[in-house]
Image 1 (tube, rainbow, N blue to C red):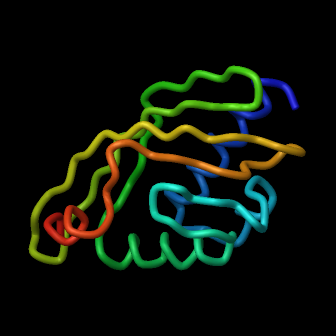
Image 2 (image 1 turned 90 degrees about the vertical axis):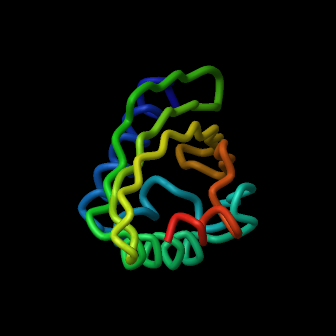
Length: 123
């Protein structure tokens, strides 16, 4: 897959997430996708994760601010915004490193790690 196709796939996934449309993620993400940051595996677990994010953060939106592709990897700087159940406005920038194989994203890592205790503080 070309670098531009990989970047286009990331844009499509991002657009789908912003529409809260998880149905087409399998077109761009492998069934056995591994999320090293959130320590989960499988496309269905990714869908459950984002379903919870949408529930926890009203108005959640992710903007691509920068993207670099090299070999089978794409690095993306995302800006995530939304509102927590307590009314706290969230505005967080993260960098995700995503690896492609056979035309789909097969694994990813995100910095900073927004899980566990930090995630709870955001709520």
